[in-house]
Image (cartoon, rainbow, N blue to C red; front, side, top):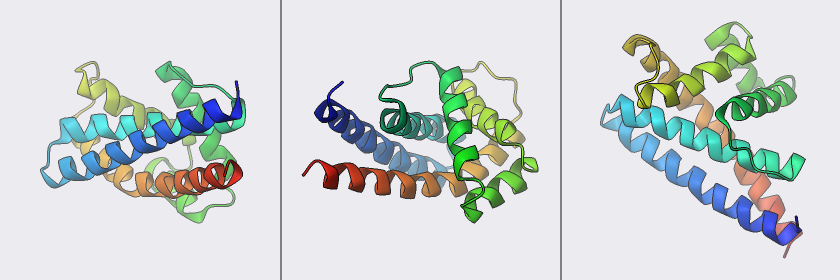
Length: 151
């Protein structure tokens, strides 16, 4: 795959991530947890595809693979990013897979395919409120790097 194609795809996912983050914040303000849950996964999905395009030169389609890729990213930055470490420790006592699976459960909740309680959904969304701005910063750095590299 050419670098220009990757740049176009990364830009597309970057715009998608920003859209989902704005929508997430709107739905949180409206206390619409169903839509906020789906926008969380939309932002995560866009982020994972940016990460995967950078490191593996491919997009990720299946949710199970997105969970694995998100887990990989978190484990990669965990030792170097105190904010990520704090959220993982606070949410799941350091269990990255528990955290990433919980975020994916928000996607299942949106489609009615999850038996998680409303209290758990609210807990997951509170974690997302902290985590999504962190990944937004990573994506901005990646996006700026890609833009500078191909200018």
